[in-house]
Length: 138
Image 1 (cartoon, rainbow, N blue to C red):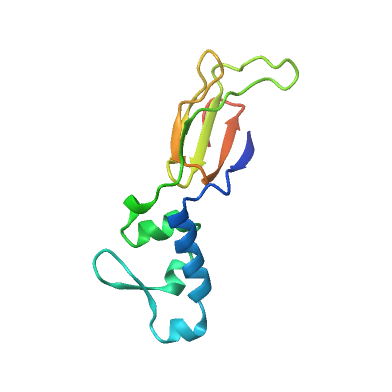
Image 2 (cartoon, one colour; image 1 turned 180 degrees about the vertical axis):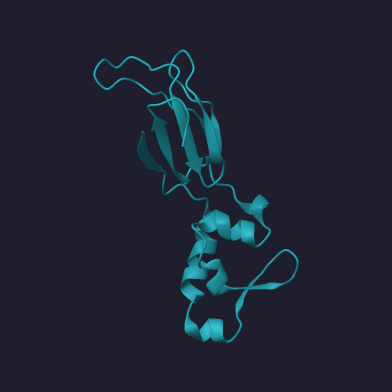
């Protein structure tokens, strides 16, 4: 059995990512899409606005265009601590699964102080944490 917790860190885009998201949202219209309009990627190929509009944020747009190095969004490098709701004491040896867009799936068992391993990503990342009450993630 697992309990799932969602997390979302928002409003932390750098100006470049905010601008890219604004441009794509502004020009993702039938008029521009029917005209074959889009943005030029790092290989000088036009990526249609409609394809870029499926991105989760400006960082992903920059990545699709081959400009990941232009993204200056703050990054995080953190871990989570699993604690007992009643006592507040850390829970060691708890199986977990952390799923984020930037880091993918991270599984493990909490350490002696109830901490997961560190995950890395952009501050506007979204994801979920699954805590497993039996031995292995399923």
